[in-house]
Image 1 (cartoon, one colour):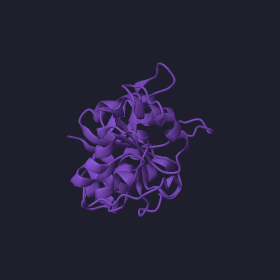
Image 2 (cartoon, rainbow, N blue to C red; image 1 turned 135 degrees about the horizontal axis):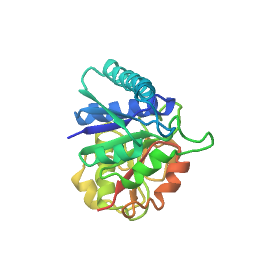
Image 3 (cartoon, rainbow, N blue to C red; image 1 turned 60 degrees about the vertical axis):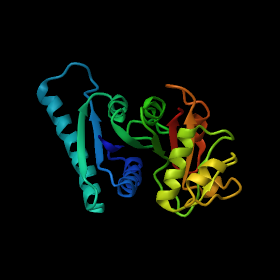
Image 4 (tube, rainbow, N blue to C red; image 1 turned 180 degrees about the vertical axis):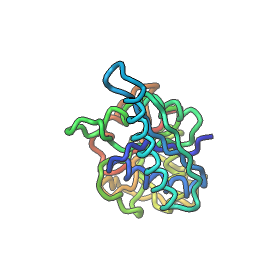
Amino acid sequence: MNGIVLGYDGSDFSMQALDWALDEAELRKLPLTVAHAWQWPYGEAEEEAKAHLRKAAEHVLWHGAECARSTSAGVHVETDLYEGPAAERLVELSSDADLVVVGSRGLSALPRAVVGSVAGYVAAHADCPVIVVRGPGPLPPPTGPIVVAGKEPDPAVLELAFGEAAMRQVPLASSADLTQWVARHPEVRIQPGDPVDRATLMVIGRTRATHLGPANYLLQHAPCPVAVVSES
């Protein structure tokens, strides 16, 4: 099992995602795989030229892994260096992972892009839940609630949301009827209202394979990280 998989490219966005991924690994007691992909963008090339690009990619990956290891000595950190599209590799790794964490955009995203193509593709295609950590600024305060989007959330969405609330010891906010779930998770406090502006994490379902549906709006506009879960 890959445990927690982090898409890392050395950008400020991926550094923020690294912080979130480490929290997940610590709370879940799972290993962390720091994944970085590279590819030669100019068509045919001499192997010597490609070797320089690979060396740079190895350094980026080394930096991410060292940051993770120095920040949390209790998490086992592995690395994955891949030649090819980053999004495709992260989806491949997701088939054997508990969670994939990515920044909202990376170094290759267009300057005005709110969510980069890698984050959007992974959120739409991954086999496990994906958390997109939005923006390069500070993470939201860990005391805010886990907010469940939608009035009739899928069980897979609620399972992740209640799990995150229990692990992080924060309340859960939802407009849905949660009677059965509250009975199963008495340790989670339900918070009334819809405090999106103070949320630690928003959780939403992906309506069907490769189709984000309403999740796409949250990826573009939510004020906090967004977890996208494939509905059961």
